[in-house]
Image (cartoon, helix red, strand yellow):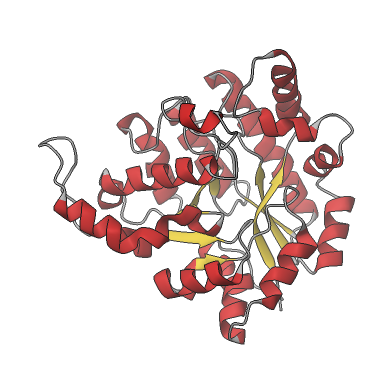
Length: 334
C-alpha cells in the first residue's frame, strides 16, 4: 500500500530562531509556548530543520512513500509584512530545492504572508507555476483577521486561479477569543487549535466565500477539526436563526453542502478508527487523506493506527494515497 502523509512539517533557521528568541524574552505567548519543545539541540528542532537523511530514514522505516511538507505553525504570520513576505519566499525556495533533490519522496505546500495580500497572491502564483508546489498553507488567523475579510480576497483569487488547495492549519486562538482557554492551558492542540480553525472554516462558509470562489478547495487537518460532526446542526441553526439584515449574506447552498463540495480533511493526529469511519459516513471516503503531523506525532504509531482500522482495501487505498494524488496533484507511483 502506497502511503502519502499530507501534513508534515519543516522549518528554516531564519524562522525558528526569531521564534525561540521571542519566546525566551517575552511574557507568555500562546503561539510560542509549544516552541519550547523545539529548543536548540532538541530532537524536535533537528527533525524540523532536516530535509534529508533523517527524515527519509524515518519515512523508510515506517513505510511512508511521500511526505507533503509545509512550514510549521505559525509560519511567517507573526512577522511584519516585509519580513514575512521575504521569509515565505526563502522557505519556499528551500523546500522547492528539497523537492527537486527528492522528487519521488517530497511534495510541498507553499507558505505566504497574508499580511500583504497582493504579494501573497504573487507568491502563490510563483510557487504553483514555477516551483512545482501542490497547494498552499495558512496558519489560520493573521493578527486576528480571517480570510473571509475582503482585504484577503486576492489570496483566495490566486488559490482558485492556480488550482491551489488551501490547507488551513491551526494556531492558538485569536486575541479576541483566547482568554477563556488560558486558565487551564487549553489554547493548544487539546482544544484551542480545533476551535480556532473550525471557526475560520465556518466563517468562510457563512460569509459566502464559496459562492464567490466556487472552485476553491480547502483542506482541514486533525480529522477535519471536528466540523463535519455538526452538519445537521449547522444547516438547521443557519436556517432557523436569521441574522440581522446586512450581517450575513444569503447563501446559495446549505453550509453542509459547501463542506461536502469544497472541503477535504486529513487524519493528522487523529488516526483513530471511530473518527475515520464517521468521516467516511459524513463526507465520503473520497475526501479523507492520511497524515501524521511529523515530527510532532510519531510516524510508526500513526501508520499502525491507520493500518489497524477495519476498512475495505479500496477505502484504505483512497485514504492512504489516491485522494492525495487527486486533490494535491501528486504523481501516482511509477
